[in-house]
Length: 200
Ligand SMILES: [Fe+2]
Image 1 (cartoon, rainbow, N blue to C red):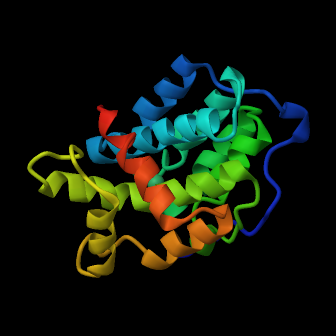
Image 2: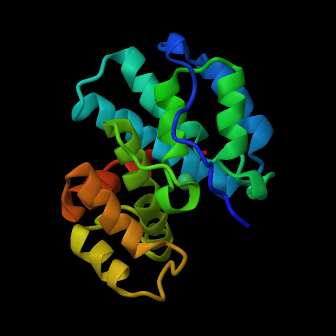
């Protein structure tokens, strides 16, 4: 099954600034995603996208929501239409005339799978948060204190253990850090100090 998108242009520049309201985004999120684990993952990534855009990119509220929306909807079609993963949500957002930056970020969140390279900082951070977020969450579930007291060293140990969260691509994580020009340690630290506050 190929998920290659076969194109690298997304949305329409004329739609710049067009976003869903929070209610519209949550409606789509709740209608399309039924699996609570996936919902939590998408919310975690959305939260980190908002935090990063505010703290590191100094985005205003409108900019922060764009980053958050990309995180919130990036896996929207994975639950019910895995064979159309990425294509379905992208085409839906294009039909709804959503800002092309958001669509592009979603299209490039799995460069190997979808054939689209992350270019903007929004693209790169969505790719970076996506894989590592899942591994860190899995680690939190096996720790008595969850995220409490988790440190970078512990996460790096899990990364080295190939049997742990084996479906998480270590290569993608390294690739994402290189593309985003951040260290693995910085990315881990950012995630462990923010992801734990997110609940369904
Ligand atoms: Fe994801």
